[in-house]
Length: 317
Ligand code: BDR
Ligand code: CA
Image (cartoon, rainbow, N blue to C red; front, side):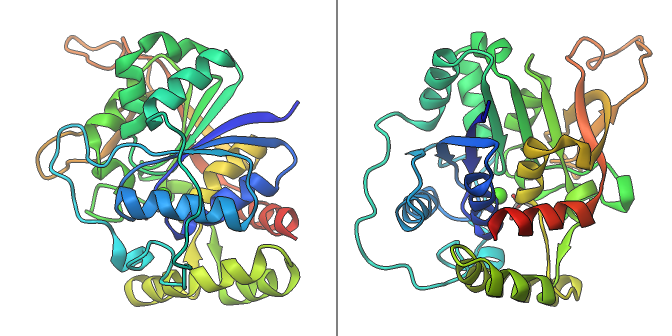
């Protein structure tokens, strides 16, 4: 049976690449796209989702979500990474791409989970605000969710600790309170952090091959990733770019590509380490302990990146 997926996203260049990967793979039934602020404003991000839906004839609903974090001050959209329009400044036609779902994203999530109990996988590749709002509004959904796969955070495996501050990754830093709620809620969470996403790099040769061999998606992905590749060249002197959000989709398709570790996850919500994700894997209960009474979750600590990149190529071609 195909996996029913709600894709929670801030599109976003690598978000779009992940979305098309999910759409193209046989094992995934992409039911809904819920948008959140982040790489672009909520208006641009939602418009990008509707644009992708129309351009690639996606059947998924698009529901618009949060435009600000739960507690912290909202940051500016990360246009220096994703371009002013969130999709690498490609030309997006000035036309109507259709309507959003009448439900706000967190209500959409609640309703879909209740309609399809134990069947929905949520892949979240932006700030976790919509998921936290859904859980806060109706905690009874948590045990009904099949799995929550999150791209975000960093736990120092393979040397990765942060990409916005020395100790925080963008999606978690953008709404640390939401992330802490999601990681400590009683649904099964798998975190696909920088520990693995920065181990997978699509270099120029790879993207050129994708452009030339994927008739449906290749040219589009090549075009949107020029801005993203420039950003990685300037900031990390990389030939190519990290494959963040598509790594979370890869986990949904084939978890055996990843090595995981079980434990409690919490997020620092103030001070200089705000947005830092922390992991406790030892079973010891401490005298003062706001960890051991929380559900055990999983984090990814390693990836077979060669097999992942092959899977991405094979799926889109
Ligand atoms: C995450 O931040 C965004 O720029 C990407 O879309 C990804 O979800 C990586 O830190
Ligand atoms: Ca994203």
